[in-house]
Amino acid sequence: MHLTIRATGAGAGMLSHLLAKNPSNLYERMEKDSRVRIVFTAFSEEETEAVIYVTPDPVELVKGDSSAHNDITQYINDREFVVSSLFCTYIRSALGTALNGKTKEAYVPWVGRKLNLELALGPIASNLPDRTLTELFTALGYEVLLERGDAGYAFDLKSRSSVRYIRLKGIETLQTALRQLFVLIPALDDYKHYYISDDEVDKIRRYGEGWLEDHPQRGLILKRTLRFAGAIKQYEGWMTRDDKQIENRTPNAALAAVTAEDVSPVALGSDASMEAAEAPKVRLNDLRYAAIAEIVEGLVSRRRIVDFGSGEGKLSARLGSVPGVHEIKAVEPSASAQLRAMDRFAKMVGKSGVTVPEPVTGSLFYYDESLRGKDVMILCEVIEHIDEYRLGRVMDTIFHEYAPGTLIITTPNKEYNAVYEMDQEEMRHGDHRFEWSREAFAAWCSRWTPIYNYSAELKGVGEFDLNYGYPTQMAIFTKGEAL
Image (cartoon, one colour):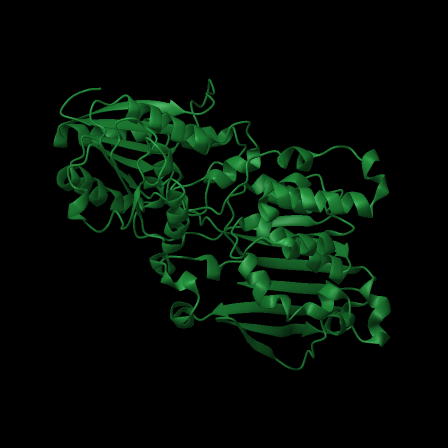
């Protein structure tokens, strides 16, 4: 992952002084489990270019003492290798002088001097559409170019990479440009590796001073960086005290965003981050859970349930209140998500008429005899996180080995992405391996019914669109008979 800063024209040679780095020397430091380097690829009074790049050590990432390393998803996680909030953490100390404007006294006048800058960063693994990414930077006066690489897969998956590289060109002070990136980069990826505390709110306030207040996408930026309504209100309160003229400004989406339900970090099987950005009145995730609970409640056999890819346990907890349910196995590979689920389940203990789910560490790729022959098995927003070419083996295991009485599957409807104004090849979440149209999903479901003696009923969840259908499509497979 890298960030390239290029200055041209008058004052370009001051870039090294503002960064407090000698262009003749290689800057190299270890930050956590990654090596940070800064090298100047050009240096003159008319053109200076510095490249900041980070190389994670995959061995040290696994050997580390952090509790995050107890998660088996470390072996498939790409977060340490893309430009995200982690990248900002790695390079913050290296760019501290420029971020804080604390250069040597002789160069202080240049801190507030605008330069002709070109910035390039990537790879970015963002679930935001190209249009939104572009608007975040054009609102700040930058010319924006988004680039994608070709994806050379040995099997039929896709031709374009899901990651993007961003190139910006504009006239701005180096300090402001870096502060804008340090606020916007976490908003692009929507991945948070840290606890959002008062310090994080203060950082957004300091780095966003002078530009974030009037940004037309401020509501989206705050929602994706601070996440929680309380933190956003705290930021807005600070801004109101700092600027007495705020009452004369045009209201924006930020004020509406703080009333939305808090958004927790994205777990396996969740595309809530995309829907949260759209700020619906009722979150699609909640509608999915309600629809699944209603279907389960209407089943004759519902005593024993398996919730595969249960994440933080929200659906499993909801199913615990369905009458007639006596056993729920919440199966999840992520240790960190499972710990949050266990906290959630602990609060259910002792409540009358509630079945407390049992957390189970497991994966669809590892057969577990204890999950065989249950009444209901649920894969809520799970299959799209599996490579399409591997999905057949998973379904064979489910239908042949586990053989549940009822199988409920939900997955995004690719056609509905047009309602979100997403690009044709864009997916709702960076970890999605595919998203199917209604026709493709129906064809896939019909593949399994004659082989394993299941019937299938297709439904939709969410706000219906006449042209594109429902945002979520659902299949209900019933063993040996129709519903």
